[in-house]
Length: 411
Image (cartoon, rainbow, N blue to C red; front, side, top):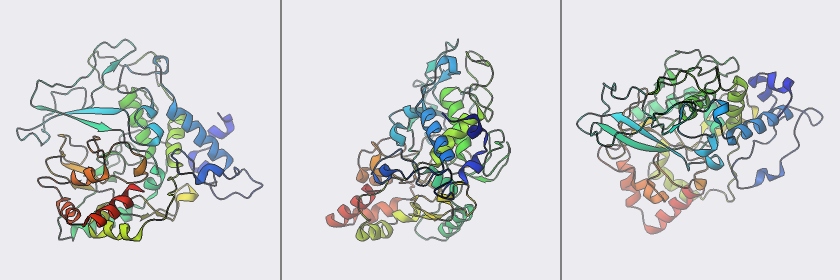
C-alpha cells in the first residue's frame, strides 16, 4: 500500500513526476497491457510514486465500506464500484426526490418537505432505524433515478482550460439553431484541500462546474468527498459533518472522521490517472463528418485544450478527447427531473462526455436508453435544444445513420 514517505508527498508533487523521469529514476516500466481496449488502466509513463498512488486509489475505489469504517448511519451504496463498475456506468443507481410545482417539471422554491435532502438513502446502520425514502403517494414530490456516471477520462476533464469552456459558451450564444449552453457557476462546498490543484476555499463562488450530471462540482477531490459523504455516510476532512437524518444521529460507529485526506486524494488521483481506453480502429472520417453535420459535435465537443500547468504532465497542454462542452443544456420537459442544482434547472443537463461510451451498459442519465439510436432520439422533446439535431439525424439515409452510429459506438 506504499510507504509513509510516499503518502506524505503532496499530490501535486507526486503527479508532477509523470513523464518527467529518466529510465534510472523512479519511473515505472512501460505497461504492456496499456494497448488493450480496456477500462481501469493507468496512464502511460507514471512514476513509481504516482503508480503507487494509482494502485492505492484503485483498491479504495473497490473497497466495500463497513459499519466499523464509519458507513452510515444512512447510505445509498457501500462502495464506489457499486455505482461505477469497471469505472463505467452502474449498476448501482441513486433515486432523487424533489418538491415540484403544479406543472410537474419546475422545482419548487420551497423544499422544506424534504428536510433530509434530495437523495433517497434506503439503507441504515450504526444505530439508525429510519431511512430516507421516496414519497410515491405525494404528487408534489417527483422521483427520478440516476445511474452512476463513468469515471474514465476524468483527469482529462479536470485539466481542460476554463477559457475553453467559456469560449464554447460565447460561441453557442451566437448560434441561430437553438443550441445555447451555459456554464453552471457553482460554490465550492468542501473544506480547503491543502493538496488540491487548484486549491479552493469553502464558499468560493463562480467556479465552473464540471462533474456530476448537472455539473454541480468543480474538482475530483470535491467529487470524491461529496460521494463519500452523500452516498456512503463517510465523513472526511473535506466533508466532516454527517448529513441530517430522521433519527437525529450526528455520528456513527466510528467516532469522528471516518476516512483520511490521504484516502480522498488517492481515490481522486486514481480517477485523474485513469487512461482513456484505446480504440482498436481509427475513427471513420465519414462518421466523424456526420457527427458534426448533425450538430452532435456542437455540444459533444470532440476535444478541448488542457492547462499547461496541470499537475499530471501527461494531461497538460494536450487536446483532450472529452466529447463534451461541460455546459448545461435545456433538454425539455420529457427529461426534466424536478431538481435544481446550482444554476441548473430541472430541465437542464450537462453535456455527457462520450469518453469510453462503448463500455456503457445503458445510456442517458437514468439508463432509459439501451442503444445509441435510442439515446439520440431521447434527446427530442418539448422545448429541447436538441430537437434540431434529432431532426437532422432522422433525415439521414440508412447508410449514413449506420456510419454515424458506428462512429459514436466506437468511442
